[in-house]
Image (cartoon, rainbow, N blue to C red; front, side, top):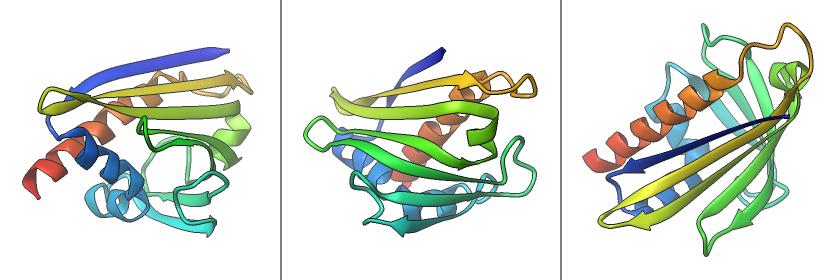
Amino acid sequence: MVRLALEMEVKAPADEFWNGIKDSTTVFPKIFPEQIKSIEVLEGDGFSVGTIRLIEYAEGIPVATFAKEKVELLDIENKTIGSRIIDGELASLYKNPKAKVQVIPKGPGSLVKWSLELEKGSNEAPDPIMFQDQAAKLFSGLDAHLLKA
């Protein structure tokens, strides 16, 4: 089992950053078109437990063209969401990939905690550290977007 974790401070207030995470279905394809082509809600409301989303990645993204994720954890009071990849290339390269994001107020900004648990499902599976790097880029980009708004 591989466990990765990332903690990073962002300048956006926790409520604003959390709203950006909650609205990722519409926000992420707009602010990250070079990474995410589209996000479509297949089941549920796009955010609550049980929601299934289809994420189509932009051309040139390594490892995956799409992923289906299922929301398995939602704690609005503690600004925490958790999901699992249930289909796509990532689901075949890694066993049971689960991610969690928590947004914590810190001064005028926020502390974002991200974690990922998975097992390599094949020898062809790349080092999962790239997912940690990707999460950091997404959080930095979301922060910059929110600060411009």
